[in-house]
Length: 378
Ligand code: 5RP
Image 1: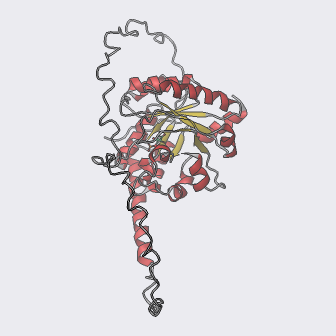
Image 2: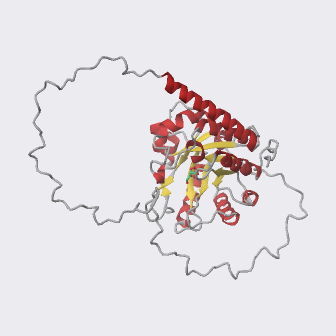
């Protein structure tokens, strides 16, 4: 491995324990101002020193992260579709290598949509990105995106992760699932687990713990940190599992302690703030004696008066939804009438001899070097 590539990778997966804590704040690239990430600068500021690396887009990096930071950046370079568009899987590469280098990216990240309409495009783009990035010693992190129609089980995720690794991705980010060990074992490069939608803090810590126990090198967690009431407490608790070998009980106790301190500090700072207007003498009403200004718009014609209301006949895309428009509501189920192609296929592995049966155990190159965390108390 070339020095530059190895050096960049070592900033993301820490060589001391072969583990990684990545903070994901790239959600806006297709979700816009995601809940509690409306102001990325405010969110990132207090969390930056607690993560090993930050996954984000170039727009947020330039606008919302101090260039003096020592935290390495994992730059998302794919995009193109939004949550209200036709097909989320229609992504392309949106950032040039030159710009990624200008931004001093430690790795590039992009999504592949295995099993979707744009599978081919996204997988070929991954191969091309790896080839281009290799010229500059830049590692590539492939995200195995999951959509509504795409599964999240070990069979699907093993396929997607393995395909990403075969294209040359240096790290694969995927989702946790039952039998996750199988996903890890069949992927020859390190796996990082995404947090997914917000769940209770203890459950998110359990997910972190389970992922590491199953062989993932770490987590790339977003909503479960910054949508928590106490983001810093939460990232510290996640860190205790990823780098401190804490079990879930210990990490959750740490979260509770830090969260309660955080609440007290917030209360205190609210209580100590003097009401700045309390003792101020009343300002005279500066407009009191001013002559009335004529209403400058009074005689202006209403320019919109005769314009047709362009939205009048548009269906309200959000009508029955909480926050996200349901893109599939009126879409025919494309798989509905498709024959299940696997239904009658014989299981090709069924009668294959187990080639590893008599082989000595190879050390798992992806597994953490440090002792495994002790199982959580039930
Ligand atoms: C979306 C992404 C996100 O970064 C990823 O989902 C991680 O964030 P979260 O923990 O909120 O799921 O890559 O494609």
